[in-house]
Length: 335
Ligand code: TRP
Image (cartoon, rainbow, N blue to C red):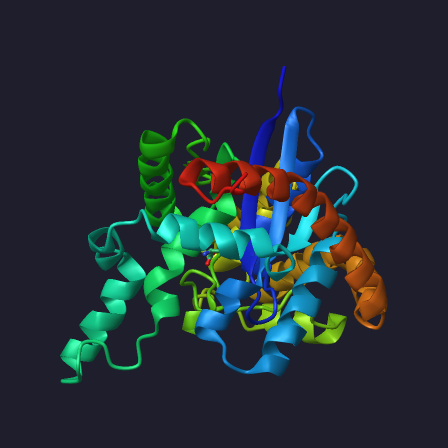
């Protein structure tokens, strides 16, 4: 039986935080180890250029994110791990798809519409500061996915519309040129925790409430001590349902550890103690990977080698497939 292809991209902007780890990196690494799955994980650095115009930041984020995945144990023998910009076939496919993508479809993209809306509300020209990169982003993302005939694409809820667009684009192309592309499905992890941040809202860079993944031990402890709680005193029973601290604890805990902590809450554990336990649990899980991360980040050449090996694997799939697509649209040798 042929394997199922699972693919996802990680935009290389910024430093990974605990929310990225719990919601995306950890489940992806676990999935890459399961039989019957062919996984493709890539650093979406073409996408990074849409938001980030500082070359050093683009390069640094790529390094940090690649080092994070490797330090956390991604098995690059079984998974194909590559940098998007090392696969020129993706750029070419983006153009071929663009020629069959309705502009009207792109007009409906949430990210683009939100940017226009903001301009209108600020009394600016609707297109003020908007780039073609932002506008065409869903076509690039469709090329990422269709290039490798992915069946499933694990993404956050905010990306579901882009997956629908990838299906639309692929379907239209297939209709015209024959069954070339697998039509991908978004997989939104229902049971994957959405981690709250220090202020209790979803952990996100846009809320400035993140806890970076690789904080040194002391700073990690401090960051956890800053998670919001209420003013209940030690000895007073506490609820777990509405506690950001408990949710963060639970994202790292086993069933038994969760049950234990629930009892401790009911028995009135002090917030300081609960935070200390949370810190210890998270630190225990991350400390070995943190050491590997710190070593790796000092050896960019090693990471580069990994990415080149991944790119070779990815290109060996993408190149013959692209040739088939070129032929289908009429880019053919003359004799
Ligand atoms: N746009 C995605 C995000 O911001 C990242 C991404 C780029 C992606 N290409 C992709 C995700 C292809 C899945 C498949 O999260």
